[in-house]
Length: 128
Image 1 (cartoon, helix red, strand yellow):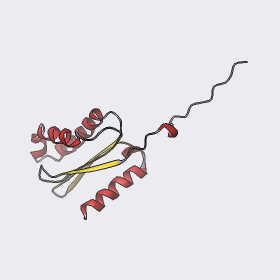
Image 2 (cartoon, helix red, strand yellow):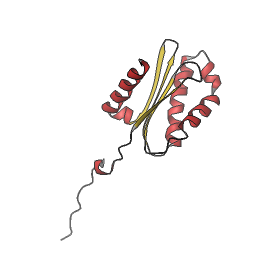
Image 3 (cartoon, helix red, strand yellow):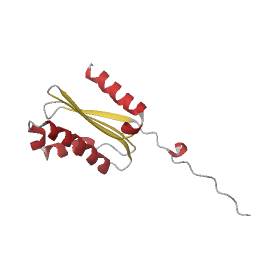
Image 4 (tube, helix red, strand yellow):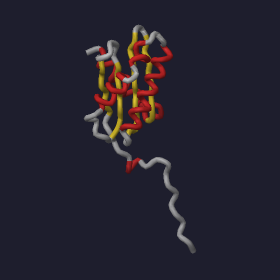
C-alpha cells in the first residue's frame, strides 16, 4: 500500500520571510514621491535605483499629463520588483499638484493589513 502524501498548502506561513516595511520619501523632483517596499533584499542601493530611474524619465515627470504620472508610478513599481528579487510588496505614491497617484504591487494589493499599514504610516509621516 503506497503511502499517501500530505497535500501541500498554497502558502507556507512557516517558511514565509517576515520582512519589514520601509518607506522612503524623495523630494529631489519637486513634489514628494514615496516608495514603500517589503523585501529581504539589502536596500542600500534603493535611493540610487529610484533617483536614476526618475532621472532617465524626466520627460514623463515634467509633462502636464496625468496619464504620464500614472504610467511612471507603475513603471517604477515594476523596476523595483525586478531590481530587488526578494520583494514581497512595492507601493509608489506621488503627491503631485492636488493629485495622489498610487501604484501597488504584491502584498500591498493582496493583503489589506499591508495596505492599511502603508497608508497609515504615510498619513502619519506627512503630518510630522
